[in-house]
Each structure stands twice: as C-alpha cells, then as structure tokens.
Image (cartoon, rainbow, N blue to C red; front, side, top):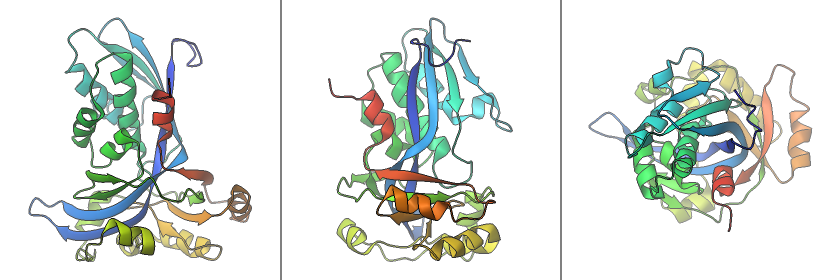
Length: 288
C-alpha cells in the first residue's frame, strides 16, 4: 500500500474532546441517563488517512487488537455511508492511534465522526451535517458533537447540542492513567449521583461545574484518584467523561509543559490547546 503522505490520500485529524463539566440529571426509563455537559476539543488526537477505491471494498490498517473488523466504529461509520451510496464506494483507511481507549477523550467517537465527514466528501455523497450527525448518533452519543465540530453545551444523552463558541481556549495538561474505565459499569453503579439539578448554559459558563462520575471512578480505579491528587497540587484538576483521563487548564503552553515535566516518569501525559472548532472541520471545510 502507498504511503499515506502520497497525494492520493486525504489526511484528517480525529481530535480528542474534554468534558469541562458532566452533570447527571436523571435516569430514563430505557436505562440511559439524562446529562448536561460542556464539550470542548483539543488540538491533539488520532489521525486518519483515506484513499478512495473504485470498488466497494473497505480496508483498515492497522487492525485494532481485540476489536473485530466489522465492529470497529470506523468501519461501522463507513458502512452507514455505503448504504446511502448509489454506486460502489470503497476506501483504504489507515489509522494513527494516539488516544487511549476507555480514557474519556472520545477517541472512538471522534474516529467515527471523521470517517463520516471525510468519506462523505471523498465519495461525493452530498449528505448534510444534520444527516451525518443523526447517522452518527446510532454509533454513540458523543459522535454528533464531533460531526458538528463546534464546542457545545449538550443535554439529553449528549445528543442535544447548543454551540458555545465563546468558551476560553486555554492550554490543557492531560494525564492518561493506564486503566480502561468501563463506562457501563460507572453508569450502573448504585453510588452514582443521578439527581443533580439542571442548569442553563449561562450558569454553566459562569460557574462551571463538576463531574458527577469522578468520585465513583476514583473509588473503583485508584490510579485515577492518585493522578487527580497529584495534578491538584499544581492546578485544579478534573476528570473528563467517565475517565480515566484527567486535565488541568493553564494560561500558556509554557506553564502547562513546565508542570508536565514535573510529573513522575510513570505518567503518560500530553499538552494541547483547547479549541472551539474541530481540527477535522478546519481541514475538510477550509475557506474557498
């Protein structure tokens, strides 16, 4: 296969997201939870390379250990688009994976969203962002925010999105404890707070908020609690999503890097800028 730097390939980021707050406001009859959260992207994440084919074959390299080919969210997203095509549409796809699985950074959802956006363009399907977001919801509650590509206040199960372009864009230090948090286990835990009072966007922006999953995750996964305690010594730390990754914000890249250099060698971490427009959209929807 050709190198993905070849001109035949389209290279698109699949950025991480952070939940700046995550309130669980209730449990629904279907077992899902109503929540409120603030999503913001960072300029760090996976990268996908796409090359269209003349047949309807899909390839993905490298294989993801423990994930069957057809179960991979990238392939599932491509299959959804193939079902809308009126001619054979295939692609060779290469994934450069940087984001940990089970880290709360949305890596799998971001990969799926980037696939929907990129192949919609490459295959010239002409599907609207609204249509792609609706398709993405069937893959996961976080996929629509990546498809729409705007920092957002989310409600419902995370699919009711209101853009929030006025968020500050600080530098973040993100620590990735080497544990895979089971999201279903967290949401089914009897100790999870499920009655946080709903707030509006204005209140969320003015007062911030907490992560209602953080205490349970710290209890079940002590590595997360340990990392939170460590980072809190430098700057107020929070967990993103259902974990395991935690983050603190800083006024400059230099400050964030300085703190990262003081972490014990056992910690995997990265520094990235918060951005209110997805890096994937910046590549795919450049001004003409």
